[in-house]
Length: 271
Length: 293
Image (tube, rainbow over all chains, first blue to last red; front, side, top):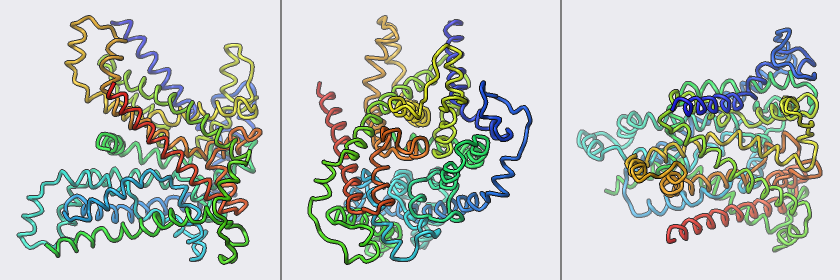
C-alpha cells in the first residue's frame, strides 16, 4: 500500500510538472534579456532578471491597446449575451406552448453546425453594413448562443413552478418574475456561463482574425499572431506577450474555477 | 394564458432574432454561395455572381491541396482524438482513486492548459519545439536522442501538433470522466472484489461499460472540436512543411479570406460540416450496436 501510494504520487507530480513546464518556461523566458532564451544548453532561469520585454510590448509596440480591446470586447459580449440567453433560457424552461419544443429542438440539433460555415456570409453581411474592423463585428455574432440558452434552461427547470405562481398571485409581472425570482436563483449558472463566454471571447482567434484588419483594432491573440510573424527569433519578447495574454484568463479561471468545472459537468451529464 | 405566451415570445425574441439573423441566415446563405462563383469581383459588386451548380464541389474533388488538407485533418483527428481521450480517462481514474489526496490541486494542474489562450500556448510550443534551442530536444538529448526538427520535418510536424493538442485538451475530458466515474455505484466494485476480480477485470467489466455514455459524449465533442483544427498549425507551421499540416479550416480560410474565392471556400465549409455530421452519426450507430451486443 505504501509503495503503491508512493508510485502514484510520483507519477502525479511528474506528469503535473510536465503539464506546467511550458508555462514555467514561458514565464521564465519572458524575464530574460534579448537572445538569452536562444542559447544551448537552454537556460531555465534568467541570469539577469529584466522587464525590458514587457516594456517593449507596452511602450513601443502598444499592446496596451490590444489588451484593452480584448478586455472590452470580452466584457461586453459576456454581459449582453448573458442577458439575452438568460431571458430565452427562462422562457424555454418555464412557459409551455406548442411551438416551444419545436423551436428548442431545432436549436439543439443545429448545435452540430460548425461556426466556420457561417463565417463567409457573416463577413459579407458585416461588410455591406460597413462594420468590418469595428467592435460590432465581434459583438454581433456573440449576442446570443444556443449552448448558453440550453445551459440556463437546464438549470431553470429545477426552480419550482409554485414560486413563480405565488409571485404571479402577488401581482408580479412576467419581467418582475424574471428579474426578482429567476435571475437570483440562477446566479450559479449565470456565473458559469459568464466565465465560459468571457474566456471564449478572450481566446477566440479565427473570427477576430477575419474581421479585424488593423493593428489598433486587433484583440490580443490576433496581435500576438501578427507579432509572431515579425519576431520569430525573439522568444523572450513573444513569451512576454503570451504571459500577458494568459494572465487575465488564468485569474478569472482560478477565482471562479468551481463554477467553470461544474458547468462542464452539467453540460455533459444532461447533454 | 395568451398573455403568458406573448410574455414567452417577449423573452425569447431578442436571442432568437440574433440567432436567426446571425446564425441560421448565414448557414443558408453559405449553402447558396457554395453553388456560385462568388469571388473578388463579386465582392465589389454582388451582381457579378453566377450560379454554377455543383462545380465548386466537383473542383474540390480534383484539387490535390484539398485532398491533402482532408488527409492531414483526418490524421490529426484519428491520432489526437483517441490519444487525448485515453489520457483523459487515465488521469480521471488516477484522480478518482481513494489513495490520492490533494485531488483538487492535481485536477487544477491538469486543467490549466484548457483555459489558456490557444494562440499564446501555440507560440510557447513553437519555441519549445525549436530544433536547436528548444527545451524538448534538450531533454531528449539527456537521454541520448538526436535532435528532431519537430516543426520543420514533414514527417514530424503533425505528430508535434498532435502532442501539443493532447496536452492542451485532455483536462477538459478528464473533468467529464471524473463526473462519470463518480456516478458508478461503489458497491459494484465491492462485489467484484469479493469475487476476486483484479484491477484490469474491474476496469474492463465495470468501469468501461458503465462509462459508455460518457465516452460517447466525450468522443463526439472531441471529434467535432478536432475537425476544426486551425490555430495550432496557423501559428506553429502555417500549414507547412510541404502542406503537411494544412487543415481543412485553414484551407477554407485561405481560399475565402486570402484569395476571396468565397464560393469555393463555402463549399469547403460544407464538406467540413458534412464530415462532422457523418462522424457523429457513425458514433451514435456504433454505440447502439454495441448496446445490443
